[in-house]
Amino acid sequence: MGKELYIIRHGETDLNKQGIVQGRGINSDLNDTGRAQAAAFYATYQDVPFDKVYTSTLKRTHQTVKGFIDAGLPWEQLSGLDELAWGVWEGKANDEHAIAAFKGMMEKWQSGDFDSHFEGGESPNQVKTRLQEALEVIVKAPNEKKVLICMHGRAMRLFLCILTGKPLSEMTEFPHQNTTLYKVDLNDGQFTIMEFNNTDHLKLFPID
Image 1 (spheres, rainbow, N blue to C red):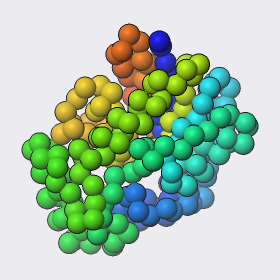
Image 2 (tube, rainbow, N blue to C red):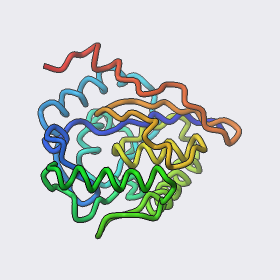
Image 3 (cartoon, one colour):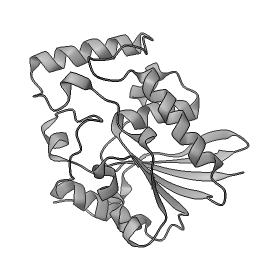
Image 4 (cartoon, helix red, strand yellow):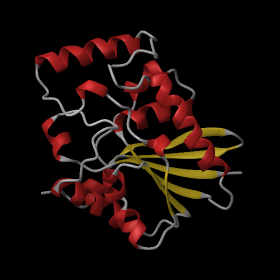
């Protein structure tokens, strides 16, 4: 059964703008730029005949695809699509201590230690498990040929690794600007990226 997955990251929040990590534990709203990005995406893709919209449980994803939801498309929240939990570092200032901590964690992940995590946070392997559960729901849903999925930067990178069969250590190979689009086709059990890091909608509808 073929499917087309349009996978996007949520629009900008104030913490994004400040370079502060949000994670699963911070339920922030889009800022003015984020709402404009969401409007630009909707204006570009409103005529795509989506069968369903999937989001995480965090409202920044809901707000990003609000146009599609308000237009009456079926909508389901999946907690498996939530952002990776960064634990004690969520919402903390992006100072030299935070930079050093994240640099150390990224080095562990890139070396293949996918069970490492910050205190109170999640590891890539833990997020992978719930992403796979969410993917199973999406893939097995009958009569849904074309779906829109709105999620988060780090989780989206891990999700794309799962879809393409790449090791999680290659998560950094997937750029993830706010509202960037990855279009992925599923045919005969194989996922193929058809559009990579597409932000053309932001060029067509410039953000002030």
